Length: 396
Image (cartoon, rainbow, N blue to C red; front, side, top):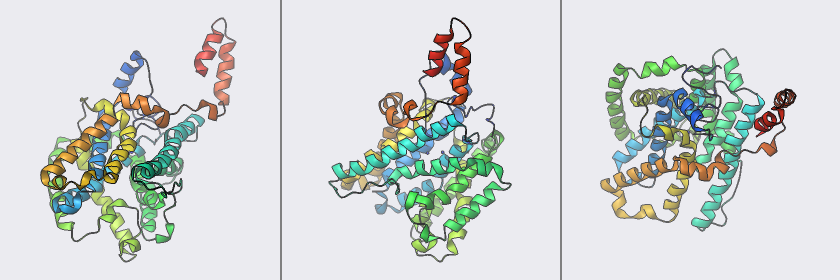
């Protein structure tokens, strides 16, 4: 789940609500008047897209223990994996366009990405130790576990944003980097750098996009064309199940690690980028642009993303997916609906309030005060009778 120059008029990437972390679902606690202003500033399309993408992520994860018994489910799994994370990453890049080395943005990068990574990278192995009775499970901040790779990747991608904004041809360069990574097995598992590098083009593409590009794919003609494209993709997925290694869609291994010749890495990287981009465009074409019942949940996608993994893994550890009836069509539908409902609930405000300490810690104690902010406070404190009150307000 995915900012990247100046924000577009319909979306405010700097802490209105679509801010430097909001592709996950960061949210402040503004007063009611501020909430009304923010609701007008947000583009419902992006909130809807983030919510629908996170539902697809959770549903696809729920299919993992079941897909081995159904070729249809395996095909659908491959197609969903071809575009659900690329869609999320493109949105992340789009709202990272304004990212620079300004102190407040670096602070938000630490508190909104690095700190949740550390906490959940520790929590998931501890969860496995307790629930799966695996006391030997290692805890390593260098080897992202399950879902946490995305936070590690986002931290790296966002730090490199000024570079991609500086170079002349950022997307071809990112594709070149990804292609080289796909033929380099010696990169290893540290920080999941294979995924960081192979998914990089989608983030860079998001940095390059403008509002008109999203309006282009949301035209009625594109929406109509998306139907046969998805239909063909599902048929192709069914056909490809016994013929193609699904590991290509994870982007976490080099070609040699997938028992393919080295040259297959760049070829598959470029081919999958094209296919993923096409399916992502079709997905965006069908994302509603108006405000719906789930639109507000788009602000909580980080919560749904990081927390639903405990449900999926807990189910695997406790054998919940071993029931025979769950491996039949009706059981698979039941699991899919249950995963969608669960991740929806995990994106709601009550859950956000409970887990805000982990997702959006304040941590003012950890940072030096910005010199410009201190100067403004000194200036206000000398303006008259309200000085003390203003100073306290700014420092709160």
